[in-house]
Image (cartoon, rainbow over all chains, first blue to last red; front, side):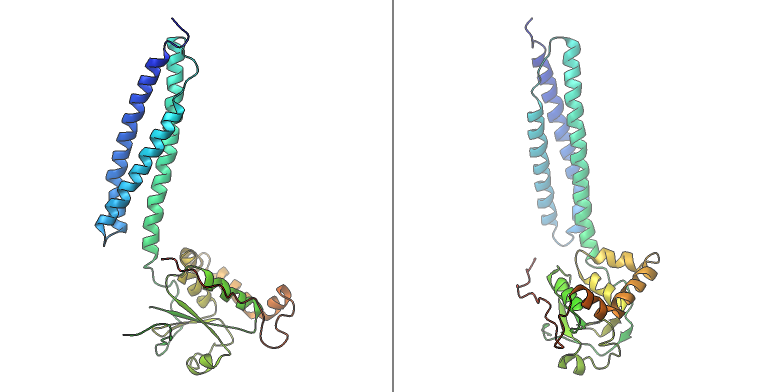
Length: 141
Length: 138
């Protein structure tokens, strides 16, 4: 058998695991991210859906692209080596998927927090009530 | 609340710089800056006892904050600093924040002179007023 006889099965296994994992993760993200985004874009449900889809597309592109870059293996002389190569690659991929996932969660959290902070009243009570001071910059109806 | 008016001390270079900084930040609601020695401050805001002594912030609805509270309301108006205004007004930090702003405010002329020597020799300060138009983030 030639030097890299086990590489092809490694590649096939890697591709199958990678693609199915990415699809599963993206679907999970899509379903659960929708809850966050509906809360943020209460008045524009279509907007929430669009943002969600765009985020998922970015997730797919990044993950599959990275997985493809990671695929090339140097050696696969024996079954043992092939398994090791596969495990190493899947480990690296899973770790980076994990990082991506937390980054995604953080993005959702930031979006939501920004929307919630925008409606908070001043943190301190006024020291005085006076007749309203309407500046010239504000056109009153 | 739709607008905040900030009455600042135009005789203190540090305050003028702070005003410029505030004007460049992204804010949740429009902020108007009125020098406390101006005619507008002396007429429209004459009913507020702290004008000239302390930083004063007035909302278009007639709420007035002065001193440390006014600093916090300025922070509250800014998109990037609203959470800080809550942190600083919480029970853990409010005594510290109050003393800090009080100290800053009561020594503002001395501090300004220390930081920017002699910018106010002729009564009006020549701190670099930013003429750049404010960026509109929408």
